[in-house]
Length: 236
Picture (tube, one colour):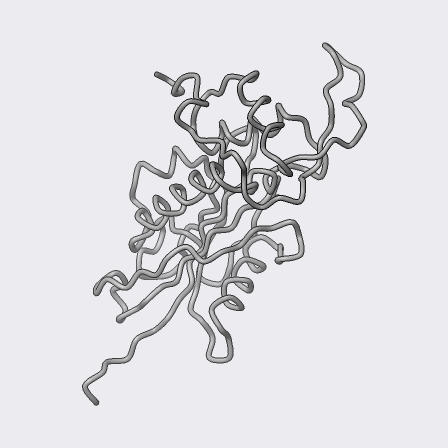
């Protein structure tokens, strides 16, 4: 063997959605060694004919049935290559962050015994296989930051939504309670963030709310920064 050892490449996915007004992450229970029976993030080895984005898209489709054209946001998160992170061999993984609204029940892939959505706060306690605790932490930090400066919060919303629906996204991802009036003012002040549809919610208890759709902007001007927009930390 030459001076360079063989290195395998994998992709891992941090997939977030909101269910029952709480941020959930897609997890799998490993069905094979190493770490058989342990929770992990979904992912797998990159096939010889694939580039990284193709491998991430394939793994995501296998686990969720979704592709890039299904209102999904998918981006590279970071690369992890600490020696010993995988006991089988030297493995470098490229992690991806995926965000989507109201994803359905997942289907376990080839190496998984089960796939399930779990509330993020239940998974952050630690114990994921490999170095997936670190990858999840990094993915959550990225998602929280992007909600401050980009319009990605609308990715978690249906095609039409109220400002209250959008606020619930921020509260779920940030893990905070937000003052409704301040938030409404910040949303309408951010040019291109949302657009009025001219419609309102159906009659019910209380005054019907205006319905919006995602606007053309990709960045928020001004940003909606956590500090100053937060009324109080949940549980604080």
